[in-house]
Structures are given as C-alpha cells and as structure tokens.
Image 1 (cartoon, helix red, strand yellow):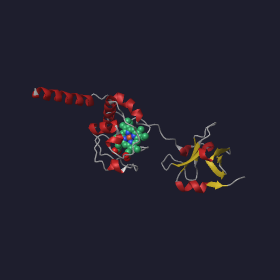
Image 2: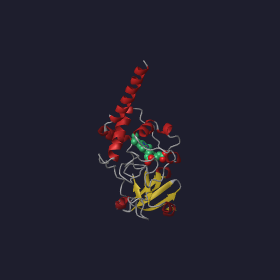
Image 3: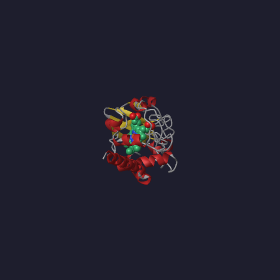
Image 4: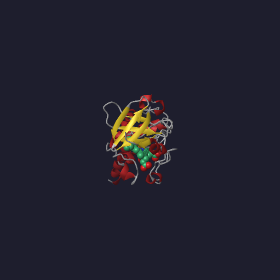
Length: 221
Ligand code: HEC
C-alpha cells in the first residue's frame, strides 16, 4: 500500500516534469505576444520591461543597462529557471510581492510551459530573437513633423511645424515626452507624434527634459 502510494506520487512528479518538457517553443512564440508590448528579446533593447535576451538561467534583476528594476525583484535572489518562470508567469504579484511588472499572469499551465520553452530556446540561441517593432526614428522626421515653436495661451497650445502649418490643441490633449535614445529627436528639434489629421491629441517629443520649458512660450496673439 505504502509502496503503491509512493509509485503514484512518482507518477505525478513524472507527469509534472513531462508537462514542463512538453512546452512547445513554436506555440510559445505566439504566446510571447502577451509580452512583446513591454519586452524585446534583442539584447540591450529595454522597453517598459528589461530585454529578455538570455533571461533563462540568469539572476533576476540583472539585465545590463535596465535602470527601472524594483527593489523587490533585484533583492529576490531568484534565478530564472523553468520552475521560477512558471511561478512568476502564473501570478507575478503573488510570486514576488511588490515587483513592478503590471501583468496579471497566465492562468493556463500549458501556455506558460510553451512560453518557457520558447524563452529557453531563444536564450540558448536555438531560435532567433524576433524583431520587435522598432521605435520610430525621430531623427528622420519630415519637416511637417518637426516642431519649430509652441505658444501657450489660456487653455490652448499653438504648435508651429517645420513646414509652416499651425495646429491648436486643448492643453489637456498635448503631452510632452523625452526620448534620449539614438532614435530620439536632435537637440532643439522636437518632433510631434500622433498628430494625424482628425486626431485631437498628440505628443511632442524632446531630446531632454530641460528643453521642454525653454521651448514653450507663454504668449497670446
Ligand atoms: C505591462 C508591461 C509588461 C508585460 C505585458 C510583461 N512584462 Fe515582464 N516585466 C515588466 C517589468 C516592468 C519588469 C521589471 C519588474 C520589476 O523590476 O519589478 C518585468 C520583468 C520581467 C522578468 C524578469 C526579468 C529580469 O531581468 O529579472 C521576466 C522574466 C518577465 N518580465 C517576463 C515576462 C513575460 C514572459 C511576459 C509575457 C507573458 C511579460 N513579462 C509581460 C513589464 C511587463
């Protein structure tokens, strides 16, 4: 009887191991769509979350050059093997309390196994990292997307573009951002993004924060 139970337990363990092993990397590549809004698999390409290049077998919180890790993740002492990734991807908030990955988790064990197989295969160089949609190259913006002046009056921003056109925005609908990367705008040449015709909202992207207030003039005509 005891022996019987022991065998039963062994069988359960074996099938759990099989479930890990059975992860299908090709299906995992599809499942990675749930991640690619925040993560790239290209080395050094950090987005909202760190690049996941080489994540399999790496210590948590150590991707080179990612400056936004939570203390909780950095101090977790976790190493990203299949078991740790399974727990993390099932319910990140429960797995490492106080971490900064705002992702609800994947309840389906099968999907997690597929994803883990995929991350492992990419980390091992068996599958090439997919191209993450590139960020727009703001250095190459047309004159019509370059901003030459911004005036603020009342509740309105008036934006003058490099081709001479002017657009007015309700101040609540214009956002100011910075992009200090190699794709970002040149200094002193902010670029307007998402201001397509009919769009009532847009963003102006600057090379660095100090430019923002120096560029905007309080001025009514
Ligand atoms: C909404 C954005 C977002 C989504 C979606 C997301 N992540 Fe994350 N992820 C993050 C952030 C931010 C961190 C860093 C968390 C911290 O420092 O606490 C992170 C951290 C990680 C880490 C730890 C990396 C390290 O270097 O220690 C792994 C592994 C990971 N995510 C895998 C995934 C996978 C796989 C998916 C898809 C199922 C996913 N993430 C979906 C934002 C996201």
